[in-house]
Length: 137
Image (cartoon, rainbow, N blue to C red; front, side):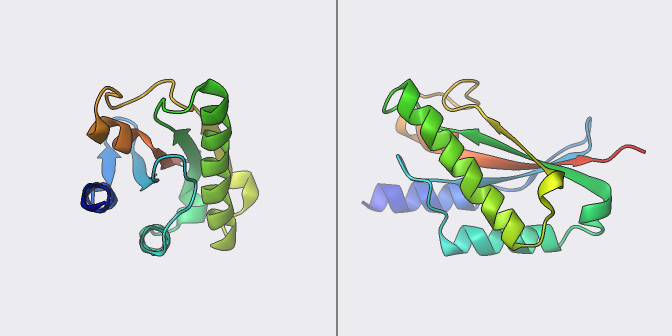
């Protein structure tokens, strides 16, 4: 139980990553295994992060990219990936982000960024990335 709490806390405190080559900004929401529940801490953190970005609605499109670990099989993880992205999608709508600005890509356990052969890698793969792409005029 302590390992889950420590890893969950470590995942929640990972820094925001900015990729200079594409000028995209990224924030990840992490989940427990088999869950699509977003805890209050991460919900508040997402809200504060979005509030800190000047002219968000005029400058960025939002992409939600959902990931899972491979535990539970393909069909379950496709469903879980979709549920995770829908949960974060609803959070953004509740924060007054217009639906047309949000695009979703569900990867389930395909296209993993971290290794799935250990607990820590699987924990990092259980996430939805909220990616802000600059609107090019």
